[in-house]
Length: 172
Image (tube, rainbow, N blue to C red; front, side, top):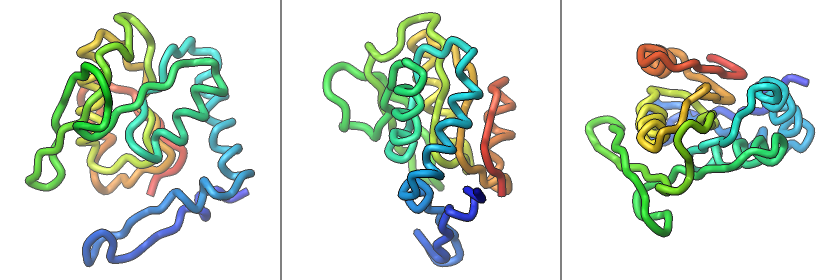
């Protein structure tokens, strides 16, 4: 099964000249979605991962299925103001705009092994902020995991420069 062919490319979105890679078409195919989860579960099964910290929203879908499959915890990381209770906040930049993300202060215990999950690795800005949240709570980031990587945007280099392991299923 050519799972990568199920990632739909939408030209000129969200702005003219940019291409959006839509993973909802992959998620809509039950066999392909299962294949992605099984491949990732095989990767992490023997690694004693306690939590999968996932970025809103497609990261939620992938990470929640993976956490369920491996009997691990699911930790949502969301835009500011979307989580109840006490949270910690980190900022990242998109272009010249700073946007905060948050995570519950109770989501990760010191020393827990965590995998950061999202659908797409682009510039790495959001992932970098999410890693900061995990580390601020004492979590140990085992790896940053993505379904698809846009290598030309440099996210891998950004994360690896911080000593982080990065895994992607497919790279453009």
